[in-house]
View 1 (cartoon, rainbow over the protein chains, first blue to last red):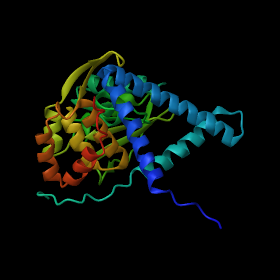
View 2: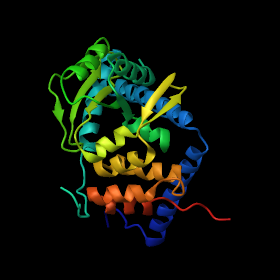
View 3: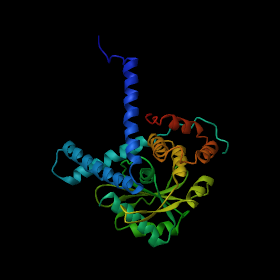
View 4: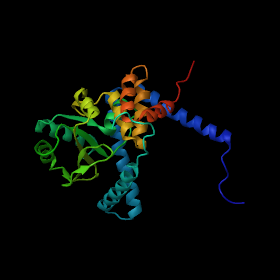
Length: 97
Length: 190
């Protein structure tokens, strides 16, 4: 027998519960922060993510030249932006347009 | 350059150019919702085309290279001037030209000014309800997550949900609103 075993319904329910708990924890934490603290955290996340992308790119290009790493990051960001631009159609009827 | 230096420079360029503006996108979503990373600074500018926006582009020229081709975006229905930082990391700057759309005008004209010490300056931001409506209208996966997070963090008791619903009805995005409301995990009881 081969292939991926189907996830049982209890396991799927556990997964959904876990996702809800994680999201609830993120929401509750954000509610305890001020507007400025949330913005500062977004800055830290952004700067940190770009640094980690560069670390990964340097490993991928197997070079000591940081510029080659940034070129790889640029390509990765381009692919990511293209993928994120996909929009599902709105499903309800608009009363305008 | 880090992202907060770039965001501050974009705001300063608008102010120095005398162009009315409003920070939007991931940073506005993070102010009101769950902080998240991004790779671009998005700002709405009150300039249909031509000279005012060119003044902002000129102010930013030492640090940002703008694409000479203005993009007309079917998602936002507006003109976008897109630039990339000259230095690494490769951040994007997107200048969205304010245009003649009832919601876009409504959102811009009731924006609020907030002092944000992490940026070292006062910043114009959309109201949270308007950011939710905008995100539901754009409708990409990350936009719907942002809309859900802003609703959840601001709290349904604090948000003008009736106002959000009326814009969603106009935009045909009521199903998206209901889906993000249903996706907010319930608060633990007891």
